[in-house]
Amino acid sequence: MIINKKDAKPLNIQFTYSSIEEAIMCLHAMSNPEHHIDCRDWLQKKFCGLSRGLQEDILDIGNRYANWLFIYDVIAYLQNNASPGRLSYEDALDQMMKMDSFQFAYIFLGLPAFNYEHEVLEKWIESPETIDEESLGVQANFLSPEDVTEFLKDIDGMRNRICTVLMDYWKDFFEGEWPDISRYFESVVRREELAFQKSDYVTYISGIHEQLIVNNDLITFKKDPDYSVSLNKVDNLILSLSVFSAPHLMGNVVDNTLYITKNLSLHSVKLQKDIPESIQRVIFVLSDPTRMKIVKALWNSNVTTKELSEILELAPPTISLHLKVMKEADLVETNKLKKYVYYSLKKEVLYSIQNSIIEYFEY
Image (cartoon, rainbow, N blue to C red; front, side, top):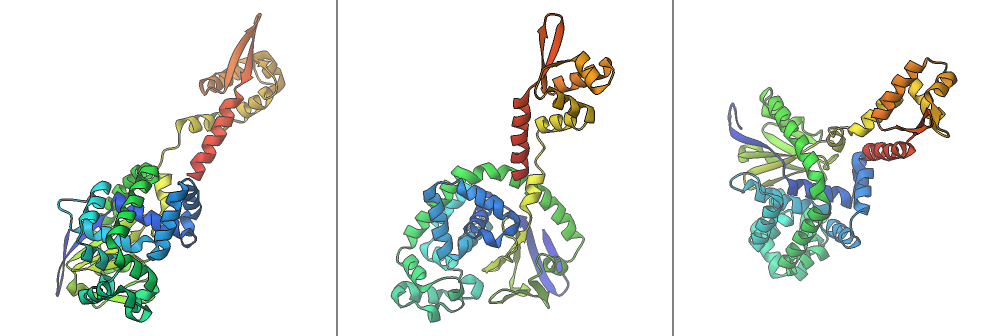
C-alpha cells in the first residue's frame, strides 16, 4: 500500500512473510535459544531431533556470523527485488547462489546497515589478511577478524555451505512446521493492514518495538550500537512477520528499502491448531462424575449393568445411558457370558489419549 504524509514523500509499505525468511529466523533462535525464552523449550526439543551433522553446522555458522542474521539480510534483499511476488524456499536459495559474489559479501557482512562504502569491501577482498578489529569498526561487535578473513578468502564456498544447510534444514524439519505458521501469518496480515489504515505510519512504526524510535522523520534503532535512518531516504518499508524474532529489534536498510521484523508469538501459532476430536470426545465422557465412577469401577474388573446400578445406587436405565455414551467414545466394550452382558474398560484408549494430550500441550 502507498501512504502519503504531509511534507514527506509517499512511502510504499508491505507486510510480508516467507518460508525461507522464517526458517532462517528459526535458525537464529535455535543457535541461541536462551535469548528466546518464550519458545526456548520448543526450540531445544526440535533441535535435538535434528541430525548431529546438521546441529553442528547450525551452531558453527550461527556462532561465527551473527547467529544467522546477516544471512537473513541477504534473503530479505532478494525477496524485495523478486518479481513478481515472494520467492519460494527453493527459488530463494537458487537466487542466492546466482548473486554477484561482491554484492552477496557486502550484504552478508552487514555493511549496508552501517553505511559502509563498497570501497571498504574492495580493500578487504584485496588484502583479507590485513583485517583487524579497528578496520572492522562497528562490525567488530558482530564478527571476528578471523571469520571475516576466512569468509572473504572463499565467498562461494561459504555460500554453498549455507545453501546446503538451509535445504537440509527445510527437508528434515521446517517444511513440516511451515503450514501452521503461514496460516497464522495470513490472519495477522489482514489484522495489521486494518490497524495500519486506522493510524499514521509514524505512530504505527513507533509501536512495532519499544526500542524503535521515530522522531522528526528519523527512525532510530536503539541497539548496541544505535543506528538511525532518515525516512526521507526511504521509499519502501518492508515489515516482515516472525514468531522467532522476539525479543530482538531486527532491522536493516539496503539501498532505499528499510526492513523491520514484527515480533509475533509461537504460542499463537500452536493455539490455532484444532484440538483432536479423539481428545475432545474422551474429555467430554470423563467430564461427567458418574462416568468417571464407572471408569473406576471397571478399572480392575468386568461388570454388568445391574452390578453397576447397585454399586453406584442408580437406576439401570441411567447406567445404560452412560455406558452408551462411553461405548460411542470407544472407552468400553461388551462381552456376553451366558445371559449376562459384561462391560470392560478399554484401557489402551485412555493410555493413548493420555499421550495425545501431552503431545498437544507440548506442541
